[in-house]
Image 1 (tube, one colour):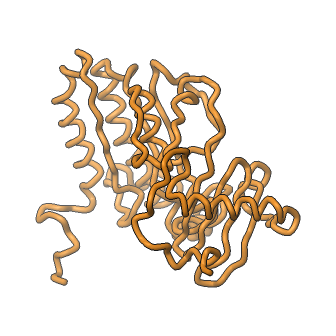
Image 2 (cartoon, rainbow, N blue to C red):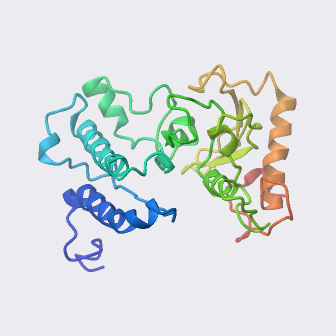
Length: 292
């Protein structure tokens, strides 16, 4: 590997990423504004690098927060997101533009140091953080702004997975997904618009240590396996979101039902109803409970 192979462009500067990405996004939006006001839709996917390392907020934000550079990086992120929202307001496109703000995983392992130094829990009430099979690894912000359809300040307390965006957008547009697309995508469009929405189908998680988990309703079953050969665990997330009390001994039947469910999902190649789909690869070695 050459010394500069990690950089994607000669003019790449880490500290400029958030500002540059936002500037380019707004520049692109400027080119869509006239057509959008005449009814032509657009879609912008803006993937900021924060709060991923390296944590280097702009100078204007340094010393402004109470959780060190990480907190200041989050303040800068908030500012950049606000610039995009301001653009929508100024161009009178906010009412009928759906904005989704979310993240890819829980906090990096430095969350432990922030508790020691600043008393700040980046993982909130949840257990562990990024790469973990516990909720701290998977629970992320998920905020929506759509003034024409979504009531300000409203909340939906049911689980949502980012895979659900595809089915939700399809329902918004009145499109039917083919059997081999969005096999694990469940629309939450009805919930967005204040209608009764069904409980989300089971969703599956996977942690870096090799363990799988299935979440269905209030229950979460973590499967055996992983690098430490851990045993199954069962949690009632409605009363124990911090996953402090393993209920596997009290509910063996429920645990067996969920174990069958995750096995069926893997074998069927989908969570939703429809034609069974083949998996792209042979079963991963982490599926230890499925090994004959």
